Image (cartoon, rainbow, N blue to C red; front, side):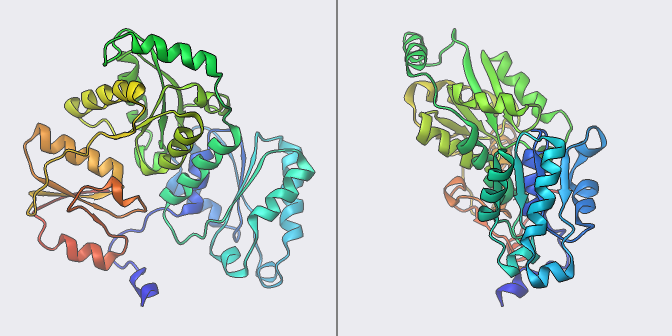
Length: 359
């Protein structure tokens, strides 16, 4: 019954988790290999990756054959990656799973260990299945980057930084604050200058953007993310990295996408506040709730909740959210729903007056 619920007949399906891996890592100089049949790479390149038309990335398909799927010939997969890595010298290697290796039980972590020993190149094996959305794949990729490449900050320099901030007002008006933007891929933000607009917003308010995960930043910038004072999480794909940096380096985070002038100002204020309090904050948490809203927003949780907040405050409209992608339920407000399957989404939308959704 659950398998039948996963079938979509009217709503276009979201990009898969394996593609989310490739999208998150696209600009970082790594070798990304989807373990799947030949031809599936073009689906990612032509449908989900607008950057492909501007610059190349080392995104490959393993070309898994029917016989290899039946017999489980992992050695060929390993040899092909090792050979290619030695030819191209990537910054890292990432393998993403799809339905076929899921069915035959491919152990990507074990294969990653073998490849890393043979190449001396950092290697990731992601157990994606192709049955989840791009959000879960990008989440895993960003979290893995943080755990593998970020270094602990110098304690003394961070202590001096905190002391200088504490002497200022609670809003930290006269201090440059270092920030990372987490969770930016074209699958959510396209290449329409929206990420650049977020960077400009922060720079205009005395922030220094250390890195943007992962549009417009190289791996070298990503590696310096541990030097930040705060993180801004603009989509759920950035939450894993944000949680890791908070636990490991005590870097607090603010959750929200800066839609509209008023909400952008609130996010800026929250970022400055949490630098002092060290308490993580969801910027849209105090939005007014209504059981019979005028508008329903359908999409990724953080972006949808942020847009709902902006509309409700600037236009005085009542809004609710249906998150159709993987997320933490505590990122949704009371009354908002997490609905992954088409049948469930259809039931929720029956009484909606105005719908805002990903086209």
